[in-house]
Length: 226
DNA sequence: GCATTAACCACAG
DNA sequence: CTGTGGTTAATGC
Image (tube, rainbow, N blue to C red):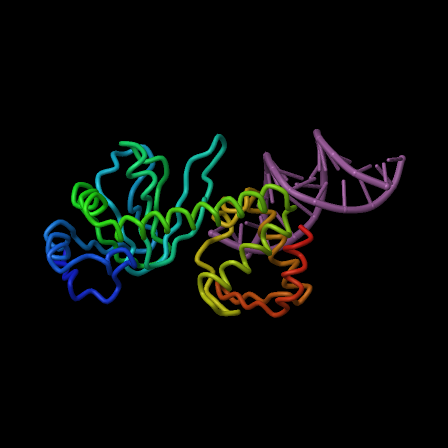
């Protein structure tokens, strides 16, 4: 929408920080910033992967269809690239990205992005670094999630949101019960019961969507023991 | 057997 | 969309 000013952008990715000023001019000519509202789909599984999506501000869920329902793979908080693997790895998106809050996305032409990788080694290295770190944390998460029981899984993502996303013990839950269940592979009923159990035990408190972690040590314990 | 865990269904607010 | 109760199946003492 708006004409992006990549050169002046204060929210450049670590990789984009390493672009020369002429490369930034090229970027500016080949990208567009689009603003998404809560709930808007940024790109959809099964559709053509046409552009690189850079999440400049906001929060996004990355999710894909499973045999029985939707599965949330991870949350992505700004600033970060969204879906590099699905954009480079295939012509068709293997998963979807949906805004959880109002978000600003810069879509970058695939050719331009590819050109930067070919010609600017530092840029390419930053991208690889990002991909590698993501793979490490994802593998860690899969190992944890597949072996913990329900309370452990819920405790883990609550702690994750608190530590990694909001950096606070009190935050607005970005997901409803159904989405939480998509995230930790359970039913919405179990999420509902478990949250009220946690609240009953004084581990958390919930006001509408605002969640406060009261006993972080307890939550850690539950998360660890699974 | 008996307890625990968690899914599925139905229904209410 | 959320919370709850009943039921059922699987798993583990």
